[in-house]
Image (cartoon, rainbow over all chains, first blue to last red; front, side, top):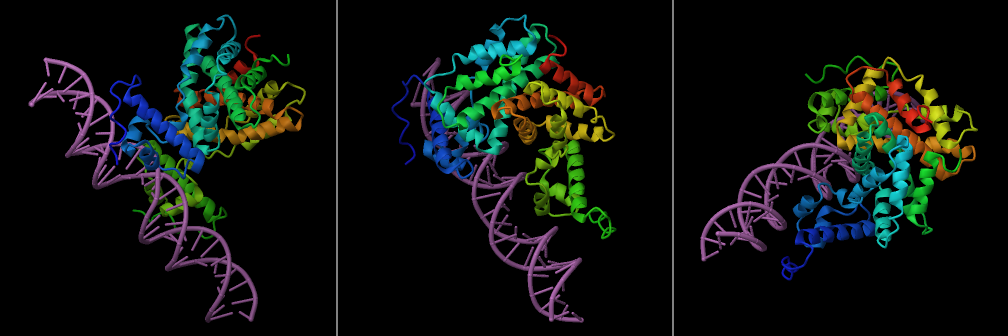
Length: 198
Length: 198
DNA sequence: GCACTCGATGTTAGGCAATAACATTCAGCT
DNA sequence: AGCTGAATGTTATTGCCTAACATCGAGTGC
């Protein structure tokens, strides 16, 4: 009953570790969207993926990490670094984010939408979203500091821009019309750097 | 050792409810700062306040609420409402917050500092801080919407401004120099509405 | 004064997240 | 084959949080 799905690999390019992780995440998201986050236990997720609950916690430090784990955050910092260094801090962050957005309308978009939607609908997960953003915030701030901006200003600018982005992301995933993510995000940045009104 | 501080009331104007609540919060903050948040159990807090752990949860829905409960958030929304309605959304929110800040350097400031410091040093509590800000964010956004700003723009503007404010608050409470809170907060807003550089 | 209700509190029991200690199985290497 | 170390499972424990039920106190009508 338990050793049924582990023998045909040894050659699959994605390591069994990555596979198990993906299995856990897929099972979790499916169960969350079917039964709700609170009604789904870690035990259930693990059983569904064919592992024990301990294995779950070895891949994800907390239950909410299976939803919050983004991974596409570092790319954002890189985009800000590529933006013109002469601009004032907030404008530069906005410019960097705008550039990053052009690569965001991908095929996997609907999966992201599901993930974010689950997170948006649960208070504890929303809080986790903000916490996860802090890492990105620091990464962006570091880029600015390297170009001579004061640490305080750098943190404020990146925090404000990411807050705007988060609002846009939450609204996008909860909206019914399937407009592209990038248009929402762009509109949010407009509010910050005054493209719409001067 | 434990039944020492509970017998002289029955007439005190502040209802026993409010007193119990204050007792619980005081005990919690003291224990948190002495032993750390994780090392302090709800049982311990309740015993210290002379009640059962169930009573704790009747006053605070979760353990972290005893730290996060601010209450001085609604005043902020009122200040934004009083700011000139003609400004673009972000500028107006900043103006309102600036006005609110003049009333913020109060005697009780060091208590606030302790509370925020406890929150700032613990990841889960930091996350809770952001979540608690959402209520304020909505309140501010409602003010803007009432004056004709689109809901989306309103949410983005208030989220960005509050994110800037939060960064300032966290830095202030963790800094060693006892500069007034308002100067930090003012500096953060400068980054947003370009008072420093144009 | 007495029963009655209602609200606040305590007691007890239980579910679930998260962690730790220890056993076991598996993979690669020699 | 045998060794070693990593990954996983088993089991037990702690602590947050909830729910069901009991208790106590203060008011209220009789």
